[in-house]
Length: 370
Image: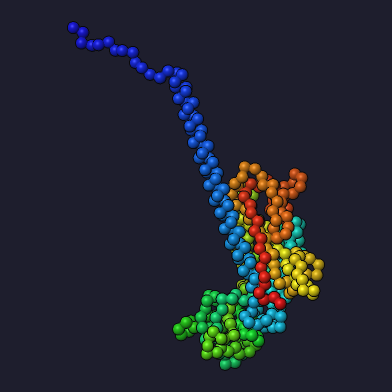
């Protein structure tokens, strides 16, 4: 007897069914890829916008706060009291005339007006078509003397504390409402308690005595005299040594710190590709005119406010097309050049760059001018 039953026909998908299923699968996969790409692009745009906004806020805060402090020397009025500078290699001997300075850098790289000699270390660094601003002032992070000076040549002097983290080699400003001295600290040493002994030897100063003996009252809150770091900063836009994915140099905001002899340049915020400033000069009639640094008859000692404009890019290439937009930066239109010539990172900016860009503008009032 045959124990095996015949095998029936096997069922399966037809060619047509397989083709229909493949098409449906491809449609679903295509949709998923489209959604993923859209979400990825949206995420990249959102991230770039956040980065540009943060970079603009930080860069603007740094520059605006420094400019606002231009000429600060405690309660001493810069219009009537000029600091007595005894520090060797100091960035100024006449603070009222140097507390705020600016320059336009032409497309040919020429400084207008001429570059201050202090800024020689960055002579060729600023990008053509951008501005440079140079600010000098006391830091505002002040302390007082622990005890009054017995005489003008008391050395060292004793500080009640050291909020500015002053160190040997730093420029120091000491002032009251009648006098101001700027000297270079040679040594700092802890004394008793929170006090710090600060010396200013003749090795780094023209003399080892101040213009007069500074005093403190028994009530620290009512004491007019103050001790602080003296700051001299130049801000400019220059290329870093990094490159974007298009092979172009990444620009950034830089600061030249001239509190040390020779100056120290440091990068602050990347993606800053242009900086423009207009200076509000107080006129004899009582009005204010806003002009560029190379304007005829601009007197920086008469400047009472400054318009600051920054153009910030995302560094990463976000768009699929070149940016052909124009931007208002401190009253100036920064946009792509006419014609087919591409000028990377200039005052007429560039076409042929696919970063996200935003302009930032603000006006600051100088607290210590006039």
